[in-house]
Amino acid sequence: MSVFKRGRVYWMRFQFGKRQICKSTHTTIKAVAQEIETAEKAALAKATFGVARTTRKLPPAFDKAAESWFKSKTKLTPLGRAFYRQYVLKLIRHFGNRLVSDITAEELIALRDNRRGEGLSGRQVNCEIRTLRAILQHCRMWAGLLEQADGGKIELLDERSDAGRALSPDEESRLLAAIADSPSPALYPMFVLSLDGGLRPSETRSLKHKNLDLSWSKGTVESGVVTVGASKTEASSGRSIPLTRRACAALTLWLSRFSEANAESYVFPFHRVGFAGHGRKPHVWAIDLTRPASRSNYKRSFDTACVKADVDCTFYDARRSFITKLAENPAVSEETIRQLAGHVSKDMLKRYAHIRDKARRDAIATLEVAEPENLVRKLLQSDERGESLPN
Image 1: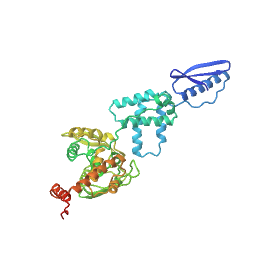
Image 2: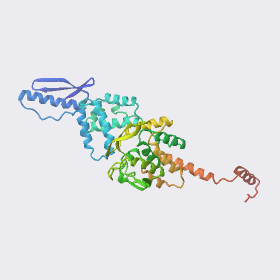
Image 3: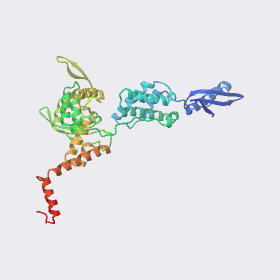
């Protein structure tokens, strides 16, 4: 094969019989240009001799490639499938049925910058770009695309590297009051399970009734334990967390809505919220107990509650608050924290180590005697005169 670059586009040049063929392939990717050259030779052979040479398949349309890649991810959890599915659908809406070979590095960089301009976080944008990279790698197109990029790589956006923050008691109180007034009935119990149990939002959404061990009395949950099912890490899956009284009360109100639920039903099923009757009170409808709730069931209402409470935080900060409270208690060991919270990142552990240092200093401070400076001064003066130190 003989393909060469003229400007940014690859051309093909080869000898067919006595004819010299030289024409543009109209692509900036070398691998695709080679495929086009092979196809051109096959077409000439068929037109001249009535036979066709065996050729490799040309690159597929993007929507077909994306669906093929998604189907190949057979080991994903239900939440993992939902996570990637949202990015696959966004990318299909963007690229449609164009050939994957037509996607350029410039387009990918423009997509990245446009998403950031839409207000998405660095992590959200990077997740979409990584999904696109996986799809193109599945079609063996990624390496060719990198050839077009400056430096042979596509830069990802900066992501938050801090460990978030814990809510202060005042912020927690204001935010819970705003959430209680939210039109989303699911928001309060979901947030309390993160705040009092350390559950990640994805873990809460994946909970099924078989994961709850509740003690009921007169239609009220008095006590209980929640066992985390599917989670992002092996250390987080299967951990058991006793419920606080606040969590029991929140679950009592929420679970009373689903009298037909069974062991395999989701605790927070997919649903829609409507408004009807006097006072336009919210009510839950279009319930599907076999599907987990979507982020739209609570995310917008949570953002609104944050604005109303004048608290700048993320939903995940409820989990950070839970772990921070445990870390501030000297009676709670790090192993207990791990058993309740599951996997804790290195950045989070550094933050909690700092909290524990402060807790230890505060504990030692309680041992200080009255007027310690006078005592130290007296000891130093006695030492200078060579006197024996006082008992």
